[in-house]
Length: 220
Image 1 (cartoon, rainbow, N blue to C red):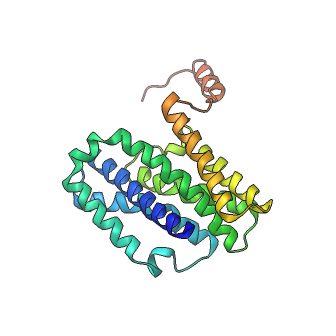
Image 2 (tube, rainbow, N blue to C red):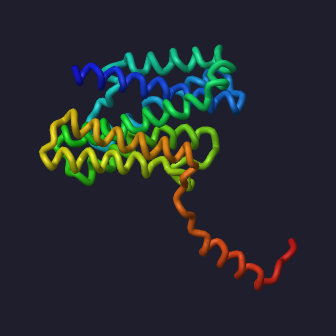
């Protein structure tokens, strides 16, 4: 039963990520190919990078091409219904949090199942849940979310960390997955609700600005 639930949530997370990627294409007024590219990169990009780093090749969507087909199909659907999807963008942001939390623990579990150590497992949880968005943002020329102060990757990190610790402590698979998932989801939703953000380090930039004021300006 739990495997069926996880499989359904896995598909749900991928389709939500695809939708957010396709919406990013809409903001840049891309054609249908742009929708497919950004949607697919967001949906399966994190899992692809994870499998490549772990040496689990061929990657999951090559052995199970239905994932790729679903990404393309969902991207095309968003292309023709983008106004409806845009009107529900706040809801999609919350769904995105569900996908983030889910992929954080599933990515970590994937690494543990391949006999990787706990540090690598936590890292793979973060990669799986965030690197699809990194690829999406790079393709559209925007600074990735994990490089900004917004609490995003840190929520995935906490979820993956708790899952790995719980698993190594002997907690059952279902309980460990649920614990990590709930923690990551709660942190991300709280960050959205109350606009939590990590502190920014402005000292170096301020110092650099102060120093440049003392150098003469050359005109060419």
